[in-house]
Image (cartoon, rainbow, N blue to C red; front, side, top):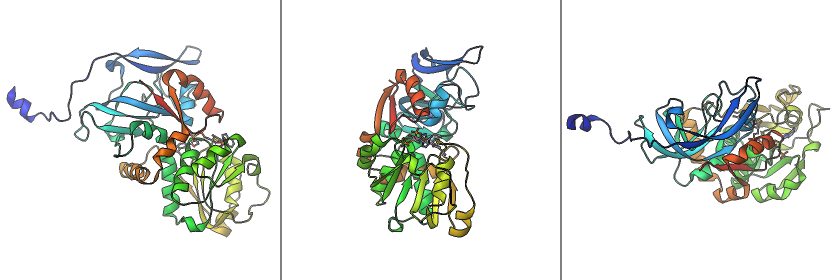
Length: 347
Ligand code: NDP
């Protein structure tokens, strides 16, 4: 026995604590209607995976709103535990990259959609999906950033790779008071960019200014279907969480050679645009996916966030929540009624 004890890599394999814990479980009845409730479950109920994590915080993204309700085609099987993001501490690991006590964060990989997610006190996942949390970011801060925030970072990185510099002019953020928009606003303003935020909620103007926006643009001023394919060259870059007619308008307002990072569809999946901005102004439309990003790209984005994101600004955008609040908050985010970032204390 002592020989085997020597060769078993004991640094990463730990005894799991067999205690029931809470999870927000969504069930579907025979009529196809979904309902959610906090249930007590056990480790054996969790899906397979090679790392078990004690979740500290999760968050709420637009996709979570869908998965908390009818699923929007994202959830394959019920019962389901939603929560597309989580941050916590490794409890046990069969993977040499992670050991008990490591602080980790997970976004993407269809976690919380196809796989059970972070609205639970414990989760079991594939080690390939995890990213070690950089020093300087707490698990709470990581979830204030979450998928929305890392996507804002991916977008900023894409724009900068295509030549965006602060001296090029103002950057437009659409859906500015939402999750992606809030982080994008604070991030770019802190990196020295002049930021203009589009919002449909005039009451969020002060909030957006505290994040660093220097101009607030009313949604109705930019949401109409295009009348002319080109308008005056205004924006040196754009992070667009809205899509639809707004993105079409924005394309015609971009400066020569500027890029738009297309992130979301809060205003619609259609793109009623013309190709003229691409042909006459060399405008670039950059697609941003956060779900299947390679590992190196993720660690780079978290490192950039640790370096460039003003962490004290997170306090201005955090809406604290518990598992019991999520049913209502899920409805709110689908109606564009959540300001900033919801951080869910699952314990
Ligand atoms: P939020 O709901 O937090 O933010 C969306 C914001 O868009 C709202 O707060 C609102 O901002 C604005 N908005 C809502 N409805 C409309 C409308 N009908 N017309 C114009 N503007 C509208 O969601 P998230 O920030 O979490 O996500 C934003 C989008 O990005 C979603 O579509 C989401 O699916 C997508 N996304 C994509 C990712 C990717 O990998 N590509 C990753 C993360 C998110 P305001 O009140 O300021 O106008």
